[in-house]
Length: 100
Image 1 (cartoon, rainbow, N blue to C red):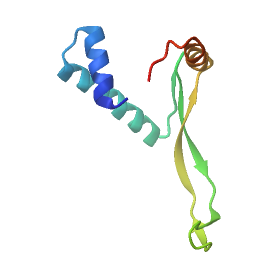
Image 2 (tube, rainbow, N blue to C red; image 1 turned 90 degrees about the vertical axis):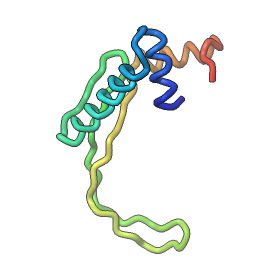
Image 3 (cartoon, rainbow, N blue to C red; image 1 turned 60 degrees about the vertical axis):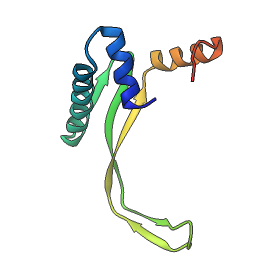
């Protein structure tokens, strides 16, 4: 599913135009990115939480050449699904109600 697919489904479900829905989806995504840039976490009850984790500097290995490569300290965004979200996906997959 792409962003355009999400816009289509939300627009159909809400009665908003695709243009209005696209602005809302873009606004949401930009808000999430900006909050994580500012070091803030986001928690959406029943959905999940976004956080930023700090990764320590380390030596990694290039899989092609086997050469050691230094990877400096960096930050990565993470997402943790809520229990409700996981349960909904699990039951949907077991019941066969989830379509691809």
